[in-house]
Length: 109
Image 1 (cartoon, rainbow, N blue to C red):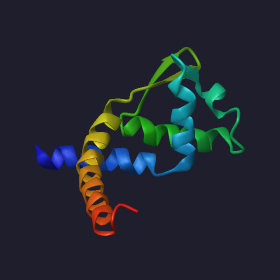
Image 2 (image 1 turned 180 degrees about the vertical axis):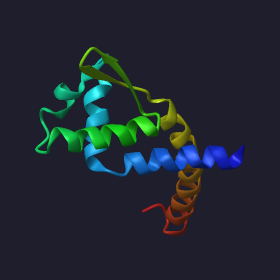
Image 3 (image 1 turned 30 degrees about the vertical axis):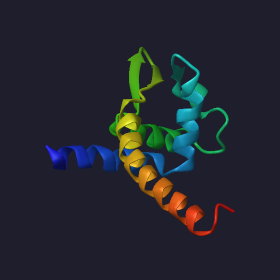
Image 4 (image 1 turned 45 degrees about the vertical axis):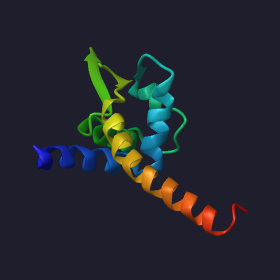
């Protein structure tokens, strides 16, 4: 079970590591769904290149793709980001504590 969860977390962080993929997710944030063409429009890259990025996001479970006729639409699925956020929060507590101790040592400056 732990190995499975680690694999999901690895895929999530790998997908989020690329700025183009993060930009694609940001475009989907305020939308119910967008077609691949609509998602690709602002990017200065080929449609196949955008589709490869969307495949990575889909494999990580960060988007859901549906096809109606010849149109493929994408919808944000933020669930995997919640697990990543929980993992990061554990380390936020560490850094917050370390910074608080440092501030106390320096006299609160």
